[in-house]
Amino acid sequence: MPTYVYETRPTDGSAPRTFEVQQRMADPPLERHPETGEPVERVLSAPFLGGMAAGKAADACEMPSFGGCGMGACGMGGCGGGDA
Image 1 (cartoon, rainbow, N blue to C red):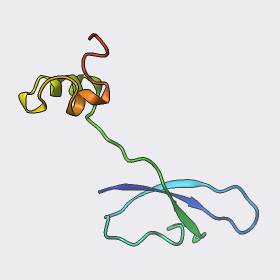
Image 2 (image 1 turned 120 degrees about the horizontal axis):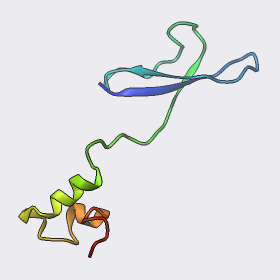
Image 3 (image 1 turned 90 degrees about the vertical axis):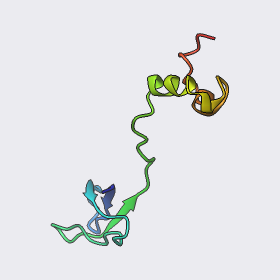
Image 4 (image 1 turned 180 degrees about the horizontal axis):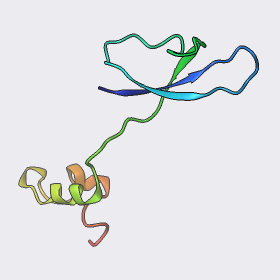
């Protein structure tokens, strides 16, 4: 289940606060903080692309389906950290 980041939109001039909520993708975005009832807005952030460490990309370069270095994961700078 994805984790979404929200930020409060205080109406009293106080500083906004951020918090995280796990929601299904089909759930509508929150409009109010679940505990305080303050208005909130979802914060856009980059997705987490776990498992794509340099070692994993280098392993992908050894796979025949990538056709050798210069294609696929290798094009993302993963081939042996620049040993070429």
